[in-house]
Image 1 (cartoon, helix red, strand yellow):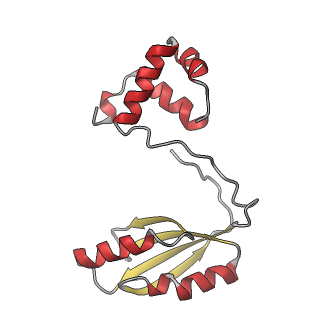
Image 2 (tube, rainbow, N blue to C red):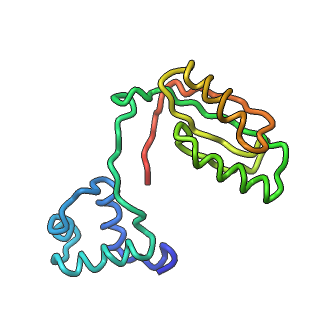
Length: 153
């Protein structure tokens, strides 16, 4: 099972339900998709083994954790050789404030989603950490005023 074309209607329903409630009991999941417990467990295991389900996690409230400040930083590298890209990619993994990192085809090389306490903390992270990542030539910051839609798949 390599592509989503190989998912049947029941698999898709299982994934849809789990994306909304990852803690649903298998018995309840089975009932909602019209299966008994054992066949539902088999499908669930297959979906995990084939990488359609990457894991389960708690969705945390960033405001309650004091991390409500969101910025997006455009990053331009000084070099875009494979060596430079790999070095930057590896370094980004070690920065906890970087919530997402996307390589971009366009006017800049990467778009980072950064979550901090406030603008002052962001400025410190930008100046002391992000600007010091391998091959970073320049950055441009965009501050999020409100998340209109923010959900994982």
